[in-house]
Amino acid sequence: MILTKNVTKYFGGFQALKDVSFEINKGEIVGFLGQNGAGKTTLMRILTSYLPATSGEVIIGGDDVVENSLAVRRKIGYLPETPPLYSNMSVKDYLKFAAQMKDVPGKQQHKQIDRVLEECNIGDVKNKTIDNLSKGYRQRVGIAQAIINEPEVLILDEPTSGLDPVQNLQVRKLIKSLRHERTVILSTHILSEIEQIAQRVLIIKSGQIIVDESLDLLLKSQNGESTLEDVFIRLHSNTAESIDE
Amino acid sequence: MNKIFIIAKKELATNFKSPVAYIILILTISIFNIFFFMIIDENREVSLRDVFRVMEFMFVFLAPLLTMKTFSEEKLSGTMEFLMTTPTTNTAIVLGKYLGSLIFFTLLIIMTTVYYLIIEYFGRPDRLATLSGYTGVWLEGAFFLSIGILTSSWTRNQIVAAISSYTILFLLYFSASFTKYFSGPAETVIQYISTLNHLENFSVGLVTTADTVYYLSGIVVCLVLTRFSIENRLWR
Image (tube, rainbow over all chains, first blue to last red; front, side, top):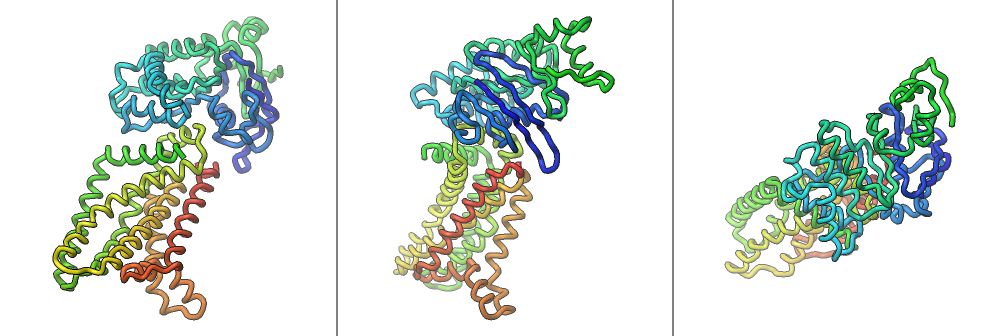
C-alpha cells in the first residue's frame, strides 16, 4: 500500500530524514515513534504530498506522491499535529467544506457527514462554532475531517497529544474502530498508546529508521525489557549501541 | 473549476461571519458618501470623475485590509496544510481565494452605483464615461486585491502581509509624483507603472488597450506569483 524508497529530506543544510525506506501493507496499523524533532512530522508530510522529498520515492496505492499527487491525496486522510480547523465555522459547515474539498459526491455528502458525526461521537456539537469546542472535541472533529472521504490510508500526527485521560481514551477507541479495512499510520511519543493500538512500530531517531518490527516480535526479542518504553529509552541512551533491523 | 467556487464561497462566508467585513463595508461607504457629497457640492457638475479618484485613493488603503488574511491566516492556523493535502490544485486554491475577495469588493462597488442614480436624477451625466470609470475603478481594485493576496501568501503574519502590500501599493500609486526626478526611458517606465495615470483615462471615458492590458497583466502576474509562493514549501 505504502512504499517508501530512500527518502531523504534537507531543510537548507539540515538533514531531517536520512535514507528512509519501508513498506506498509494494506490493513496494517503502524506507529511512528521518536523524540520530538526526530522527523516524524516531516515524514508524514512527505507521505501526504504536503512536502516534497529532496530525493527518494514514495508510492501510495500505486501512485507516486509527486507525480500523481492529486490521486494520492484522494486516498489519504490526514490529521496534522494541530487539527486544521476554521475556528469561526460550525462543525457541520466545516465537515461540509471538507467533504466538498475532498471530492465527496454531492449526493453522498450528507450521508458521510452524518456517518463521521456518529463515528467520532461529535453529533452533540454539530451546530456549535469550532472556536467554542474543547480540545478533545477539536481533535475528534479533526479526525472526522480526515475520514470523511473514506480514505484507504489514514495518517494521524500525534492524535492524542494534549488530551486529558478520558479524552485520550475516547480518541484511542475511535482510532481502533477506524482500523477496519484501512491502513493507519500514527505518530506519538506516548508509548503506552502505541502498545495498545499499533501492530508494528517504526522508531525514528535523528531522521533515520532504527527499528522496524512488529510490536510482538520487538517486545519478545528484548530480554528482560518487557515494555516498549524500556526499549525506546535504551535506544535513545548514548551508551547503548543502536540496533539495526 | 468547481473547487474555485467552493473556496470562494467559504471565503465569503468567513468574511461575513466576522464583524470586520461589515465594519469595512459601512466605514468605506460612509467615507465615499461624504466625499461624494463634498465633490458634488464643490464642483456642481454631474460627473463622477473626481469621485472615482477618491475611490482609487481609498482602495490603496482598503485592498490590503480585505486581503491580508487570505493566506496568512490559513498558514497560522494550520489549515493551509489541510487545503494543500486535499485533492485540489494550487491554481484552484489561488483562484478561489481571489474570486472570494473580488466578489466582496464588487459588492462594495455595486453599493456605490447609487451615486450614478443620484446624478442621473438631477442631471444628464455622460453615461459612457461613468461606465468606463466604473470599469477602471473595478479593474484597479481587482489589481490591488491581487497584490494583497500575493503579499498574504508570503507570511503567516497578517500585519506583515498588510504592510508589504501597503508598500507596494504606495509605490505604484505615488510613483507618478517621482517622474520629475527622472528623464528618458526611466520616466516612461515610471509613467507606465503608476496606477494613477491609467485610471485617469478610464474616468474621462477613455478605454484604451494599454490601460486594460496594464491591469489585467498585473493581476495575472500577481496570481501566478502567488501560486509559486504557496507551492514553494520553504515559506511554510
